[in-house]
Structure formats: structure tokens, C-alpha cells
Length: 449
Image (cartoon, rainbow, N blue to C red):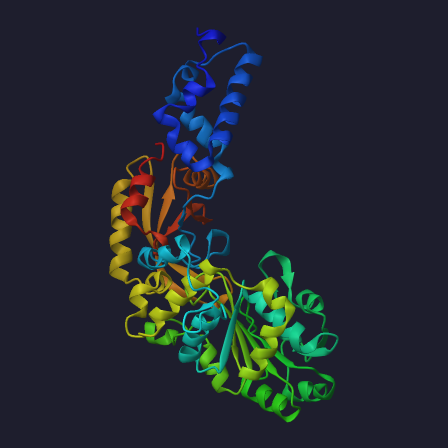
């Protein structure tokens, strides 16, 4: 049996090629501390395991202990395409390569090249948004909740804002619209009922209101005996009382999704065409870009928003703006945008593509693993079209000696974690997220029989 004196020195292990990938991923201090913890445990037990004599023996144990100490890629096979917990919309490698020089070198972020003086950091993105949505002006902050907070704080601090009771949403992480409104400094006026709100409900309080707000209930829906006030009617009422109207769209698609065979979702340009003064939406949901809150609308209103001191506190950084500008550029060619935005490619993947993925995955998982190909439903996710699903395909996974929870845990424990879902006593792997397929199969082949 090995002796304590046989334990290799920590520095010797740190210089070994086998541990270099872990040092690159987690940092030398984290790996050094983990090695010391492993060796100290053996010293306390006065027993040395055979694996502890060579660097290769430390690799798996260090990787397991440090697994949650770094961001790592994963496969999203949950059937929720835009998954908040898994990073929402994905960026294409081509787009990332385009913006790499902007991230690694100085750029004209707030510099007017023509004037040789300080400029507006939103100006370049603003021009693209104006072309795409037909707005007069635009500005960018770090997420859509911040965009709505900034609008409310600018025009309604210390004043009242009516909202339909059917639109008092709670978004992920238990953030509620009434609480956000309170933080913005305005007073919420609840109007209507949960399932039915009429224009007369807003008319009754318009005189005492600083602005009129409509919130797209992106993460739920009300059906049956229900009524809501449509954007054109709210816009007309706001105009009559000389106050701003605002619609929080949440997800915010810039294309008519029905052209891609997907469910209908209102676009910022359609809401602006309804006469609404301000529209807020996200950059990393249906837009398919990076996390950002986008405000588009009337020039004079945007000027007030940009002069609010909160705007600086909530502004977007250079990486966000660079990614957003590159993403918006793709939308200027609507005929090819679905080919270049990963989110749209995923949502529009053909039945043939999904079937081919399923066949290859099933072929890679040999007995005792039991696989079946099943038609399934996928959600777009992250508050987008909650009452609509799209047809998808899944591979279900069973094992004679393992229950579904154990199988799901083993999938999460793979070198590149695979996040699936459990239903009907089986683990379901939705194939819209099975990309890149070769890497996924190589990963799944590491499952223990």
C-alpha cells in the first residue's frame, strides 16, 4: 500500500500536462487548493489511494470538485429553446468572429470620428433600430426590466400609472411588475379585472395618470371569457390627454414569425404603427442577440429618457452594443436572416433534420440503454408565446438499472453537461438543441452502461 511519503508534491502535479486543461479553466490557485484538500484528507485518514500517485488520477476528482466554479458550455435538450437558466439566445460563431476585434481593441464606442470629439454610444445601434422599426429614436440599457424602469422613472416619478390587472406579471426570479413600478418611483393604479379590462377603465383614471402602460403578458396567457385594451385604443387615449403611451413587449421579434411557420408575435414596428409612443423589448429573446433592453419611439420622449441620470447607471457596455449592432445588421436582409440567427435556425429546423439527429443518437447509445424516438412539443421559452408550442422530436432514454432522476443526473455529469427533462418515467432529450450533433454524440458515448 502506498505511503504518505509517496504523495507527489503539489508543484509537481501542477506542472503535469494532465492537469493543464483544469488550470486553464479554473485557475492555478483553485487547482492547487483542491490538490491540497485531496491530499490532506488522505493524511488525516493516514491512507493513500493508488490513484493519488500519478497526475492522471487527480484529474477526474479535481474536475468534479471544481465543476461548479466555472462557466462551461452545455447542451440544452429541455425542449425550452430560449432557456433563461441556460443563457437564452445563442450567438453564431460567425457573428462572434466579426465583433472580436471590437472586444480586443479600442473602438469608436463614444467617439465621433467625423467631429473628432465625444459622441453618443447608442448612435450606431440607434440608426439601425430606426431603419428596422420605423421609430424616430432609440436607446439601449442592460435588460428589458431596466428599459421599463427607466421609462417609468422618467415620465411618472411620484405620479400614477394605470395597468390592467390582467397584465400585472411576475417574471422569472420572482420579480413582479408592481415592485418594479414602486422602485421606479411611480404609483400603480390597478384597472379592470384579471380577465376583462375595457377602455373605459383607463378612461376613468386618465386625467390623473402620468402615462398609460400596456404589458405584453409574455410568460402566461388568459383565455376564455376575456377582454383587453388594444394598443391603438390606448394610444388614442394617451394622445387625447397629452401623456405618453408605452407598451412593454418583453420578447420583441423584429420579423413576422408567421412567415417562418411560427406562431404570431407582435413586433415593435407593428406596435409603433398602432400609434404607441414608446416600446420596450429584449435583445436576447426572440431577437436572438445578447442581453439588452431596447427602447424605441418618439424622438422627444427618447431625449428625456437619455437625459435621466439612471440611463448612465443602466447603460449597455461595448460588448453588448457590438453584438447587438451585428445582430441587427442581419435583420436588414429579412430573406436570409433565419439562416444566420441561431435561434431562428433552431426554431425552424426541419422534420428531416430532427429525424436524422434522432437516428444518429439512437445508434450511438448501445444496450443496456433503451432509446425511442418520440414526437414532442417544444416551447419557445423565456416568456415568448407561452400559449403556443412547436412540434419537435425527442429521443427518450431508459436504463434497466437506473431511474430517470439518476439518468438525468448522469447526463448533467458528462464533460459537457446535457440538460434534459423527465416525463412519463423517461428522460426526454429534445433534438432542437442537439447542435453541434457530432460533439453531442461524442459526449453521450461517455455515459456508463
